[in-house]
Length: 577
Image (cartoon, rainbow, N blue to C red; front, top):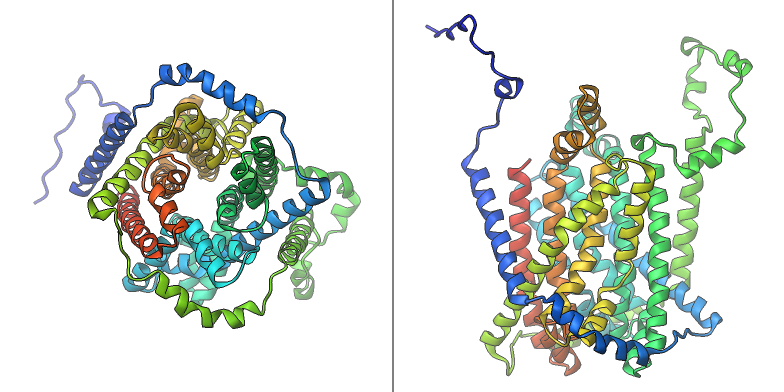
């Protein structure tokens, strides 16, 4: 017999809405996840204490900075014709490599996503491929491809393409896991194939996020091409490496300024494309909509009357899509994209015949990288260097988190109180992200000296731009329904943000923070190349001394670390779903 709830006592105070609202029980898994986050935060605090960033010491080192910039003198640039060629070549190899990664990432992401993978085995394999390609530093990949091919653009394209597969496929898979399952399940219930589920039920939901991811990765690859120049990849990075090796700091920083401006331009294009794809989701018309509104004739009453009712339209007429402003914009954007891709491939001057002859070189190159060895340094030294790298990555992630959360929120269209605030936030994120970490690390090392401090600050500054943009994009892509519902009840903007925007973006927030930690672990190895601390110092010595077995051992350490971070990130996203 079912027990009845006791009747409320007359005159007793009624429970509030918050007290009557259902509460999610705390499962042991969520408690474990919370403890894990607390432990990671504690380790990050410990890493920050170990780094020992001291503002007074940095201020006291101002004389070093003054002497450095006095030595730099005026910025110099290559000849205009050479500069245009270098810019075209850099953009071409970056765009081609990113496009290669985007194409390869689609099937990997489909298999890696929990809600689309055919089996756990397929998901594990796809995730491992993503982690493996992400753990392989693009500098190491470029080094290998330079040995297999020759100096030029092709090693850079392949290094960027393979390395970017890990990052793009991860973000693609995360976007698939966050879709509304209704359309896909409806197509399946109607007898649709897996291909129809993907093209009609999944792709329309994830396409804006995918395009934003590819454009964002293209931006990262543009800055990363600076480092690839140090191993012989043609373009602005190679010219800059020549300048710094010759101690021509004016020319080196001049080329760095060109790369910064290219990053800004690319961000403007990325934002415009993304805004066009989001459409009315942002509650504002995009620049493309406004442009087309000026050239298309207004809809008159006569035209409206000439439109037949839906029951009078023949099947042939219904199948003929009208040339609306949206369709014109999409077709035009598609053709422009195709033209840019073709131009990017053409400017790289790829020797396609090399793909037929390279197979004979693979065994000889592979032998140089196996077996892995730590050489004269020993296991203890290398493990300590890897621990230092992890400490730098954790400290930089901690320093970047709060500023990026604030800037990313203010840069989101649905969070910023006005357009000026949003544009200011976006501008700051563009400016921060446009500075290559390698250049910033070089300047900081001159000011503060060799060690962990310079590498940590450089990664933290770059992380603010990276994480801030990802958070802004994720907040803009949340469902507007909960936000409008809270606003309709009289909630303040802050209450709407805390009660609707952040809860919907929690999974993305966790994923982006671990993505930044993942990125910082690998970037810390690159900063070690210029004396920023960590295992990168040994990676540089091994590569310059042709000790490729040591390069393999270092890469395996990085791979193991990234695998652990990836496993924790996947578990966190599942728990806080």
